[in-house]
Length: 150
Image 1: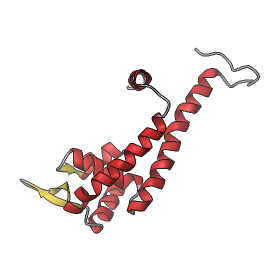
Image 2 (image 1 turned 30 degrees about the vertical axis):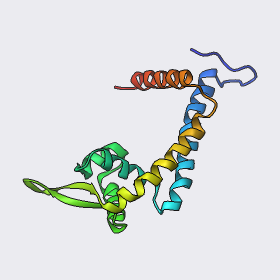
Image 3 (image 1 turned 90 degrees about the horizontal axis):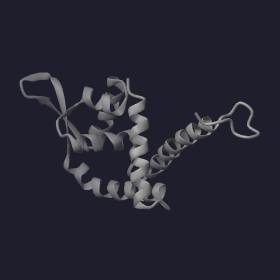
């Protein structure tokens, strides 16, 4: 266990590390929020497009799990993406109660710009780190993630 930071009372070095681990995603979310505004998308909508692109035919329930959101709130996100002509719901073959999600041509036109914006963000967050450091960071974060699984 990491020791108490000098002059910090009850704050430990582990606290400082975990605070930093929490600060990075918070700043990343803020940066992504700012970068999606120019596309009239929320970060959640952007992420939804990414998951649907990666897995065409994804259901709303599956998307909700990926986004860690309630199914109803994801339904609202899909409604917005449908209104923007980016996504459509199609009934699943053999089960008309299940809706599969598919990207529309307008979304495919938007994806290269979203990709460039994401790459700018990633370049910014990883600036100053060499390939070996990024590989080590990936390995450390994977280990931490594994440590937290049930």
